[in-house]
Length: 425
Image (cartoon, rainbow, N blue to C red; front, side, top):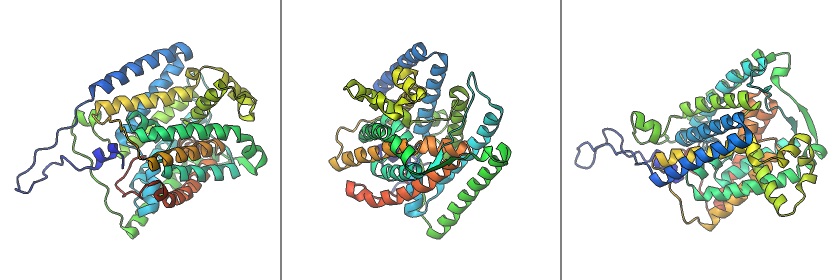
């Protein structure tokens, strides 16, 4: 459990909690803002916003602001993807996965009319619809395995780095390395290995209305099944967050998972409208790593992945002209500001070697898996299902299998199988 999650689940400051004398203890005061990190984060956020507007124009500045909002929501809601599957597989706790179902249901309901009517600000919105093939199966399994070893997912890596989780910096490094390897090896998986068609339920006779109805029914069924599993396995109750009331809870406290679910779905819909495609994360890691390799003399532009017109233009342009990169940087800084304002920003100076190794290995597996599977827990799972793509569902099923394998591998890196109260990503 991370330092952030210790703060969420400590149970300190609950109203009416009594000590040994029987007297009611005073509620614990919320932590004070960390002024220096807050000032640094605010300055960096404003400076990067200005630079983004200069390099990429107003649309890129809007996407950067949406990225900041994503970082704030992810931090305050501690919205976990890694742990949602871990909790379900390990102990049958489905609370976090039900939050996923709510997020996906709201996103589907928002995406359907936007995609059907082509609603975009200067762009023609397109969902994430990718082929069904061996690359998705292998990539999603590697990603699920890597999540449990690396201790985070794609979105969790960004907001935990912003929140001061030093170990996750090594996960990010591994993510970038794995993404570059995946880009280098991309043609093997997509051109050589067996691959089927890209299928969107909305492009069948069902249309968007029918696709939405089917998606909502499946999401509801999954939520119901998690409750049945919980009744049979009787998992321990998740911990209660510290009591922070009123406006202080918005700025310093933890938000309910359902609030995070709805907010993330809404921000993804905004991304679709202004970017022309759903929220994504890991394509930026491939770009950052490939630009670094290019700077070291590696001819990455000759790779098939970077030879397509769209990717070649992305590689040639500045990083701040790349929407996903801009949003990723916004997530990091948004989480930094939120963590500092909430008094939770803490840098850990020492990371145990096994944890460091697990973070790097897990990051490499996730980076490679995300490239060959056409996305990560955000692009493939969240964006794919919200776009009514069958590859999103395939990705989710296989990633759960990878999660099971990851739980078996965690002790090799000094990691225990967490308690169900652990809702870190």
